Image (tube, rainbow, N blue to C red):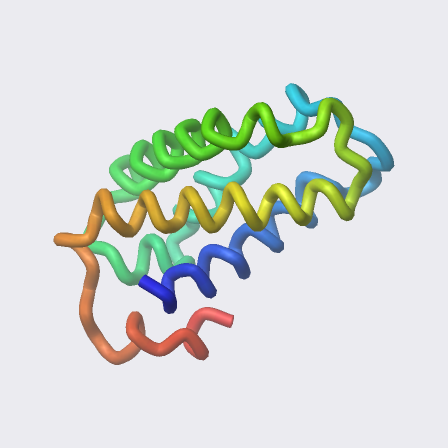
Length: 126
């Protein structure tokens, strides 16, 4: 799963950049709501690792990613600051939530992982 962590971190950074664009401060609830949608959407784009390397439909990917994201946001909710200073805080917490959600996704769908050269090589997903 270490390789999956790298993919998750890359995805989380991209999501955070999109969520953070043009904002200086964001309230926790707004950020959590945005991440609840943005992270599963980013994970489940057809060209992304989570779709290419797991034998899942778009719907199954989104449902699994949304569930994992929701659980991870709840897990860290008390630690996320009431106001996030962007982009620093959003990137920091996005990596944490993204890593957590990616690991949970991988565990939930481990039997559907495509154990091929493309999926096992992190350089294919940078």
